[in-house]
Length: 77
Image (tube, rainbow, N blue to C red; front, side, top):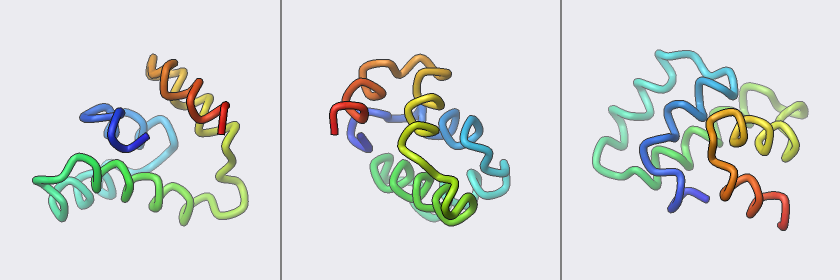
């Protein structure tokens, strides 16, 4: 997933409820690695929502930002 989301990871982070400051920090710390930015976005979301960070919520967020292909891939896991 991290390979396919590209720059849309920021919108995904917002849709998952991450603060803009968290998104900026991830971007700054991994400014030359989009894959790692996406990975860290998901890690931050899971840490923030703990037991409420579900695959279904991720799929819903991906669909909200029109990343249906990736959402379909996650559903098939």
